Amino acid sequence: MHTIHTIVYPKSFILKTVQINMKFDEFWTKLDELLSSKSDFVTIHDKIPFEAKRATNAIRIDSNTITTPRVITKEEFVKVYRSSLDILESERFHPGNYSKITQNASYIVTLFDHIMNQK
Image (cartoon, rainbow, N blue to C red; front, top):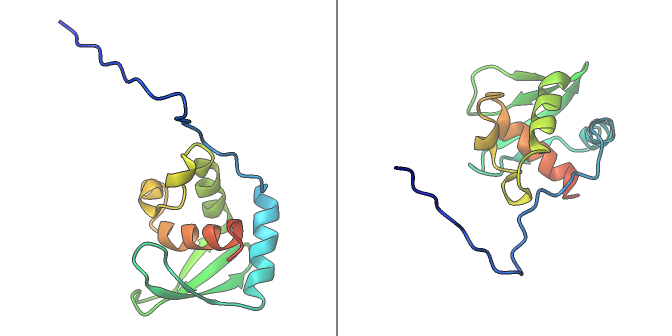
């Protein structure tokens, strides 16, 4: 026997994924511009300071919590960006949502949040 569960939402409830208004190339350009003047950031979730610097088609991350710098390729950013399009707005900037895609989610999500929310 199967049980069917019905969820009834009030009329005011809206379940939505908000479309990101920024194309990836626009994001990448804005990130490049940002990193020409700023390099110090703090991860959203764990509040860990890190430094982000431009590299060829990549971003180099340095932090006291990692032994060697990480180079995050543009392609890795693209994967997270594409995945974020299917995530609810309220969950979009949670690094755990991207842990199966990359070990660098905390850094990528922090930079996304910084650009997308104009911090």
